[in-house]
Image (cartoon, rainbow, N blue to C red; front, top):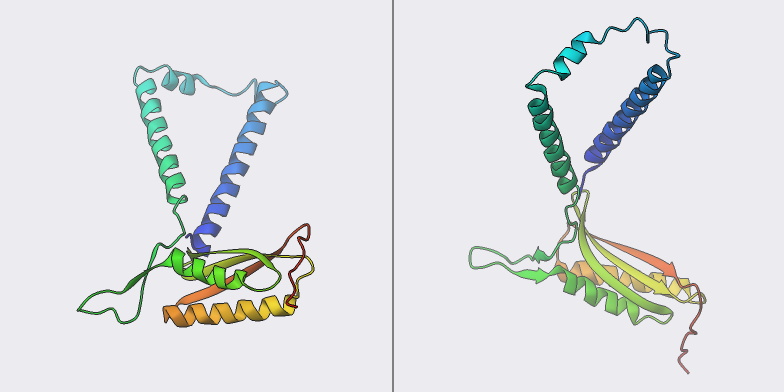
Length: 189
């Protein structure tokens, strides 16, 4: 996924472009209205000569194509999928490589969290967020669920996931959402 530096650069570039477009549009509208003190004194013959030249149409089209390609490149660079499909496990070496399907491991952790009383549903995925591997578990709980129990189970599942993967670079993030309406919690009798 994108880094903080890239996000900052994107935001600054977007702000500067927006300000330039707003200023240019306002200046053009002001000049066009005829209220500008420069409207009568502005000599546009040089600009008119350039735009009426035979080569201007081709150059303008080429610049437009280049700008469009740069824009597409910028968009595609920001569409990267952050989801990680495979993780390499310890024990990989010259004799072979041990891989695991990251989505299935995170899904199994979500299933373990879903078995907690008060958890309605859970899902899991592994993503790359700002250069860091993060196992994201999202659980929807009943409004009357015991948060202490859910939190303890989330901690336990996170620790088990880290132990199973045996990778120090994988972090676990558990997001708990509260359902709008209660379906009722089955209580052990």
